[in-house]
Amino acid sequence: MKKYLTILLIAAIITGVIPSAFAAGPLDNFKKQRDYDNRFTDVKKADWFYDSVCMGFEFNLIGGVSDTSFAPTGELTIAEILALASRLHSICFNGQSSFTQGSPWYQVYVDYARTNGFLLPDLDSYNRNALRGEVAAILAKALPASALLPFNTIEDGSIPDVRMDAPYASAIYTLYRSGILTGSDEYGTFHPDTNIKRSEIAAIISRIVNPDTREDKTFMKLEELYFAFFDVISTSSVKTSIPGVIMRFHGDVPKIYSDNFTDIVLTRDGEKIDNPLVMGKDVSHAEWFYEEITDFYFKFEKAITEPGRYSLTGRYGGVPFTVYDKIIEKPVGNVPADPNDLLYVQWSYTTDKNDAPERISEVIFCFKGTQQSFSQSDITNLKLTRNGSEIKFSFEKGVYRYLEADGSGVDTQYNLLFSDGGITAPGTYQLSGKYREKAFTSAEITIK
Image 1 (cartoon, rainbow, N blue to C red):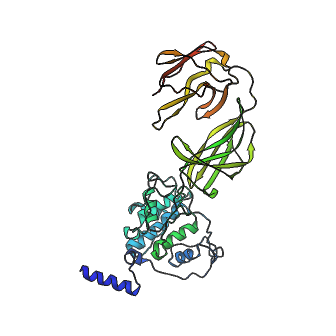
Image 2: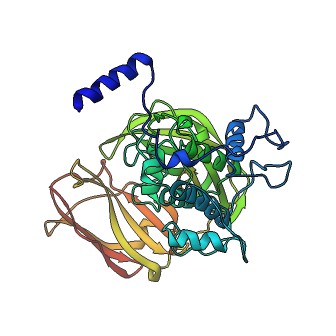
Image 3: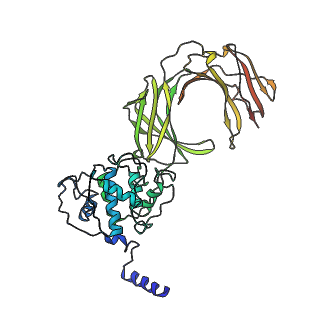
C-alpha cells in the first residue's frame, strides 16, 4: 500500500499536479449558482476585493445593500454574521442552505447557530456591529475541521495584537494558520476589537469556499514597545513644557515605522486636544536596567506649554499603550509644604544586575496634593545611620520639585541629592528627623 501511494505521488510530481489538502470534502458542496454582471457600481476591477465580491455573489453567499451598490466599507452586524455562518455551516454539513426568515428576520439563524454550537455566549445585541474577533470565533466554530487544516506556520503569540490569553485567540490563530485570515500589514496585525467591513468579509468568504485563494504568509516580527513617556522640560520647581514623546523599545532596534502607531489620543484635563505627533530623527541606543533599549523621539507639532494634566494613549501594531500623565503648572509660590500632608520619606537608588541597591542617590519627601515650596532649612534633627550608628553626610544645594499624577490623585515630591555622588558603602541605612516639627523615619535600605 505504501509503495502504491509513493508511485502515485511521484506521478503527481511528474505531471505537475499536487493534490490539495482541501481537494475533497465539505468544501466541494460550494457551487457557482449565478453570474456576476458587474452590477455593483462601487466595486471596480482595480479594487483589491473585486474578485472576492464576484465569488461571494456567484456562490450566492453575499449580496449588495441594493441592486447596484455593495458598500465595501460598510460594516456588518452580529445578526448578518450569524446568517452568513449559518449558510456556510449548512452547505458544508447538509449540502445546501435553506432558511425561512421570521420575526425578527435573524431569529432562524440565531436558533440554528445555537443548535449547532457556534452562537457566542453573552452577546448583548444582534443588531450592533460585529467585531473582527467575534467574527473569527463564530466562523472557526461554524466551519468543519477539514476546512481549517494548517496552511501557514504561525507561532503562538506572533500576531502582534492577539495575545494567547486574549478572547478568541484560539479561533484567530486557527484561521490565520488555515490561510483564511491574512492580517492587515506585514506584521500580521489583526485589530480584533474593530468592526469588520463588507469588503473584508467578502475576502474571507472567498478563501473559505476556494482554498486556492488562500495565501501562504510569512510575517515580519514586530519590534516590542517597552513603554512610552512624555519628554518634559522642567525648572527645579515646575514642569514648563512637553515638547514630545519618547517611545522606548526592547533591544537594539535599527528602525521603526510611524504608520504602526495608530489611534493616538492626547487629552488635557480629560478633554481631547488636536496636536499631532511627528516622528523625529533622534534615535538613541542604551542600556537601561541592564537591558539593551532603543528610544525613538516623536515631537508634537506644537510644544505643550498650557497648564493642565496631560494624558496620551495609542496603539503600536494594534497593541494599546498608555503614557504616564504629566502636569504642566502655573508658577508656584513660596508657601512651605504642609507638614500634615507629608506622606512618607523614601530613598532613590540605583540597583545592580540582581535588582539589589548599589548606590543611594537621593532622598524623596512626598506630600499629598499640590505643594508650593520646600526648604532644607525646615528639616531639623536630621540623622542618618548605617547599621545603627550615626554617620556624617551632606546634601547638595537646591531642592528638585516634582508634581506627579497617578490614579488616586496628585502628589508633590521634593528630592534632595546626596553630595559626592551618593552613598555606596555597604550597610543598612535609615534616615530620621523632623519636617517643621513633624517627625519622620524612612524605611531601611541595605547595600551589600
